Structure formats: C-alpha cells, structure tokens
Length: 211
Image (tube, rainbow, N blue to C red; front, side):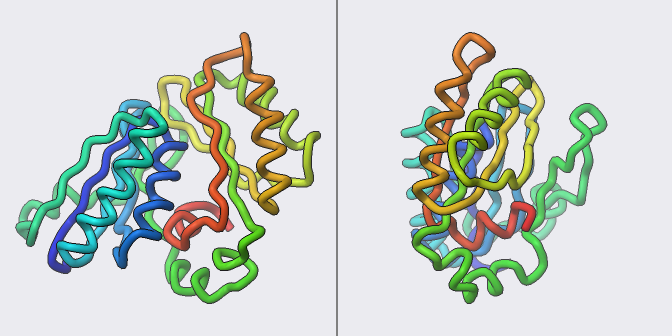
C-alpha cells in the first residue's frame, strides 16, 4: 500500500462510473477495487500519494454530487495494515442478483488501455450509461437506444433494489443520440436514476468493465 487510501461511496452505478472517470483523469492514482452495497452505495477504493488521492477524491465527489449520487468520501493517510483486511474485500458474488459485488480491475488492463489509441485515447470513443429502477424501463430504453444509433451493448449491471444499468459503447455522437433516445423512453415504465455519456473514458473505468 502506498501513502494514502481514498474511499468514495456513491449512490447509483452511473454516478459512480462518472465519478471514477473524473477522479482517474484528475490525478495519478490506482483503483484497487469497486464494491457494491445494494443500491445504497458503490464504494470506489483507490490509492496513491496523499495529494493525488485528495485531488482525485475531490474531483470524483464533485461529479457524483452534481449527478445526485449523494457522495461520502474520506482519505486515510497510511492506513493500518490490520485494517486493510476489512477494507480490501475478497471476490464475492451476490446470490440475490447473481453478480459479482466486488469488482477488481482487469489484470494489466489499465496500462494496455492507456497505450491503445483506439480505446481510451480515441477522442471519438464513448461509453453511455442508462440506469433505471425497474427492468422493464431499462429494457425499453436500451432497445430504443440501439434503434437510434450504431452502438454496442457492453454489459448490464445490477445493484439490487431494482437498480439496473445498461452500458453501451460507440463513437461520441452515436452514444449521445442513443442515450437521449433511451432515457426518453423510460417515462411511466420506471424511474430514471441517471443517463450519462462518458467521452474518452479513463483507463480506470475501462479496466472495470468487460472488453
């Protein structure tokens, strides 16, 4: 462990990914893991120097707050090694949502994706996220999104409490059009939690999502 540990807990998967993108771009930090705690929280755990972690946490907290993510954050200077046994969690799968609730960055993904001009350094590449409370709403939204533009569905993430996020990828214009079309369809079918486009996503974000 390096000098400091940053913890940023956010309500909602979409605000959490937007915050992660912001903090990863704001300072030189390493994302250790992301842990899900039902729809009440997604906690991002990161490490680095005290100044870098503080800057990263501040950037992520601002983005999460602007998106209604109700962030809670702290920076722990030189965390006690005994405490890390509770802070850093082993792999865990929730039987309720049948999904991993401790997400580890893919091995060597950060460095690879930093070098890949076709991925994280491509200014036309983007991720889109549509998060709802209710399956029907998000299914209708993603169908509309795919019909509106040339995008690819990357994954579906569940938090519990009915919160479901579908992540798409493509060029910025297509992703923006798809997300706009998708969120417009949520309406009375369910509750829209968030809809967001991450242009040129950071390597940290990409390392936590399927290829």
